[in-house]
Length: 341
Image (cartoon, helix red, strand yellow):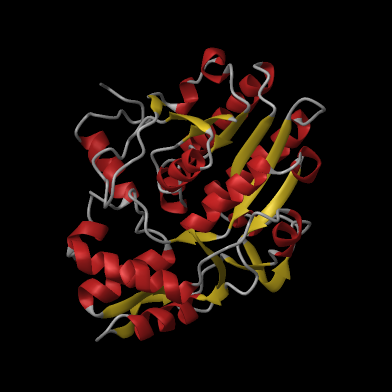
């Protein structure tokens, strides 16, 4: 297939694109590349890049593709909280615009990077794809609204699919340190403290970034009737953990570290467990390869190899919100996060 991947230079995209190429797909990327100075390790796949803000996508950018994998957007809750109106503009309005243009251009499949953040504050019951939404952040709200809009666009010619990823972790060329497993492992390695910013009680489903990429490939290659207007919780049901359990795994893997709590550590409203049996039963090519313990060991070995320091992952190079604020302060982005180049 000829596939357009928006956000292909981000955390997931830099893992997904090589996997698509390996399977013989013709891949083009579209990315504003805000994080071009933030490559952590490895090389990026060499594919054609439409360097463009997702808000500025035009009909011509979508023509000739069999599928769009839409990853682009403000990628987490701190970024979403930075200026909530931008989350609505970029994550919601721009996503719906891209989908409408794709439909008008004859694109048959539209795979949307949704999130289990849709479930938000949902307690400790296992949630299937039919569970009620209860988002508690602008990021989660934006994902819910896009799913609703895409459902309205679905018809005999346009098949949207909603990949609701569990909380990601794992090594990527464009690594994110704001993700709980990556962050706790980084704190443990650099300071000797598995540093919890909540009381550790909330539940989270977690999934390795490579397994997220596998879910897109499985959906892309599945028969249309299996994925048309369907949502999938992406992960493995056994990979639901309380935050303190992730901290204990990090403690077991990283030598000479202890578990500690931030002075203001308290309960987190975001608490949910998800059932991932639907994707396992439906998309037979989706066979997750990673567990939390194996992923923490991968991160620990990578941090050792590059000599990761606290200032790296808590500073403006690799911390997403800090890097964006740096680009704004330098005038490379304006207050609306548009390029001044």
